[in-house]
Length: 290
Ligand SMILES: Cc1cc2nc3c(=O)[nH]c(=O)nc-3n(C[C@H](O)[C@H](O)[C@H](O)COP(=O)(O)OP(=O)(O)OC[C@H]3O[C@@H](n4cnc5c(N)ncnc54)[C@H](O)[C@@H]3O)c2cc1C
Image (cartoon, rainbow, N blue to C red):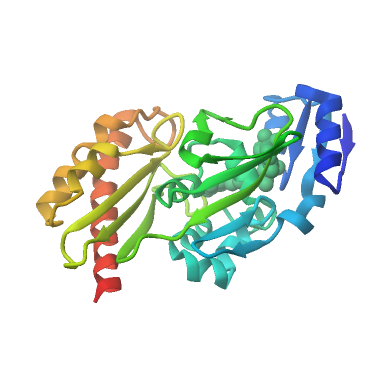
């Protein structure tokens, strides 16, 4: 296997041109190396892009958004005061990924390009309506994260492209949000079911202006519970309203039976954890409004 360590995007594009589909980009390597070991992929060339960290390893605050370089580590996302100030939800979510050892190596961009539906960050990044930037020879395009995550381990990174940045819009005013990861086995496992919820209240501090719910580990990619979101918009969020919205979620998911639980069990758990997440997000929105 050939190994390249470019330090500029132009060099990465050259390498991708040369090896085409026989090349694989490697950032932290935590996902890719496992796939190579399991012989799920057998690249002829590994292109280690950690040399781009000078340009794409920082977090940059902008007027109404935060730009996060693809090579920022997941540990930095967990520990950075800038991230926690801008989005406590995101800092909490990265804290739930695997172990510190993994988070020290794994990157934001590598995590998203990996496209594993059981990962934690895509769930909260979907609720935050994040976008990803992809650079290719012909320029940079920006894609909604929900459109970028296409299928099981399949994303919208096109041949010749590199995911360079994630753009995180500010959360709505008077909002509260939470990420809940149901882990019945061990604390560093992948989720059996996970859910991120965000509730934004109207000026009266009672009516729901907007609700967002995204689930992880229960489909081929993250799943937005749009029926639940629609039911809650414009409502006063009583326990009954939240219960009714959560009851729509099992019909929206399509989990697999595995050693973390049966498909039926996971489907039932989506309702329970959505109800808990919405209740907590509402409490946080009320605190933010008080
Ligand atoms: C033991 C273990 C436990 C884990 N537990 C969890 C968990 O609980 N929750 C969770 O969310 N995740 C978990 N993970 C997964 C981990 O989050 C991913 O492996 C990690 O996010 C991948 O990031 P990376 O930088 O190491 O990517 P890499 O392994 O380097 O790359 C992953 C994929 O993305 C591609 N790629 C990388 N960077 C880019 C880029 N900039 N542009 C385009 N393509 C790119 C690579 O070609 C490869 O296909 C676990 C992993 C391990 C090994």
